Figure (tube, rainbow, N blue to C red):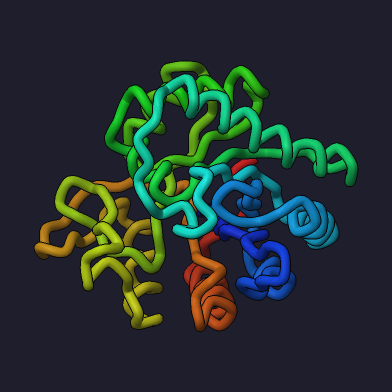
Length: 252
């Protein structure tokens, strides 16, 4: 039986600002990537998200990003590998503290937004992130874009890696995600997004924006929790995957 992990970026509310329907979406996913306070989230939201994920038996991971609340971590920031190494360690361990508080293990790390996309192509950035994860806890699974420099550097260091694919994003012919600055970056049609997920999981391929078919490895599928129809999409996707005879299970 084929199996796949369904992950979602959660804990992205902060202060008086509420984003997403985390408590409800947790019923339909197997892994939660919890924002660590830099691109979104705060100490109270982190604590509550870890608590909810534990109660719903959802695997917990850290979701570190650039220190960019205003841009939601989606703006490219030029900085040194040393800086990246240190801020990844800082964020992972911030969340690890709340996991320890609630007596639940942290299982994975998934970089966020611009950091994730830049590390997909830049081996130096990817190595800094992978080393920070390894030096913090070598048992953690590193999530990276399928076939990216991030998964390659993680494997090279000896980490377990999970090749991630995206339900609601379009792909370029080189296997990278279409930048959000382009009008065709997002798939708004629920049926098309679900069809893309099934293609990736069942055939190991995805159709790029130019119509070409490219190889892809789908260990874990990302669904975004901050979209307008995020909850309904999570419900529909999970139901369809299960009906296709595919098992939904966390990576670790």
